[in-house]
Image (cartoon, rainbow, N blue to C red; front, side, top):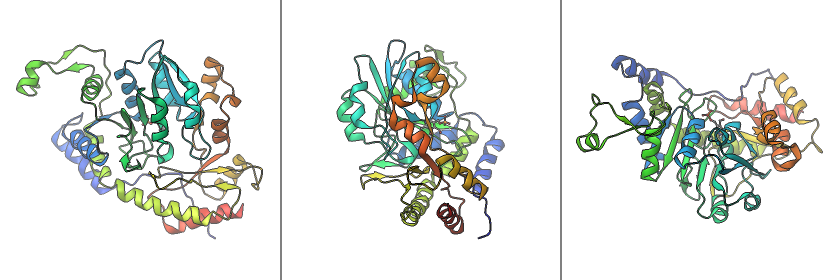
Length: 379
Ligand SMILES: Cc1ncc(COP(=O)(O)O)c(C=O)c1O
């Protein structure tokens, strides 16, 4: 078979994104404006939430969510031990304590049976990550959490769902990413979703330097020539209209992208069943997988080579792979400052060392998928 080069991920952008961006340049409106508002409205509709607030990244959405809940020194926030590092970093930026919780090696998400032991009277929130596009087991988590707010880290979960409800509408607030490795992209960017009117207003003000709309402006409608008051310590987490314009085009293709990915995810699962050392994602009909990534788990007791050697072998063949994500408690900063050790969270440790994401994106063609399968089988 002729050698192909297949990147782990590539965004689909083209003439429509160019044209939409050009409109911003033509109008001269480059910061948050009409395109961002249109993107927010389309995003809110697709995810069945009252409010969607565009921000600069999922990380800043997560930070805003914690600030809006008043998380600060003395508080604890539960974070899955296997996730992108920023899910935990934002807790530290608030001056609160990260309480890691182990994950399930079959879903890569929070293991509900491990959560209760993480809760104390100081628990202010739980970061519920829907990793790689698969929602966490929300019913089980809600039953344990009671009234503790759930912040959905839906960075990978645009368009995903659980029991008929979209990600972003399953918790107190949802935080999405539009980094180019996600199913829809704005280059960088994020979205915060909520059904809570006061949290939405607070987050909207916080993302814009803490600017509040005065009663006078509320009454008369926006008057841009009147300076707002700043009664909160805020941030500049505003998305640009250039990104909003790209988002408007991308969000309208989200379901098309996911459906295509789902088709090829099924193909992988079918074609790779013969490899007893490679575990492919499994989930029940309760879950609508968003397929941000296709992440496998290697059983090194049976596999022809260790995970890292297999990744090297595939790279030689032109197939890019990545570890799923990090066990955050194993990263140097967290080991040094929290004294965590790899074996503290064995599920996360195994996911860190044995997971392997293989290419699944909307720039791949049938021959690419067949090539990846053949490369894996040739190992
Ligand atoms: C689970 C998770 N949380 C948060 C993030 C951060 O997203 P962003 O790059 O938009 O800040 C990512 C990005 O990969 C992620 O996978």
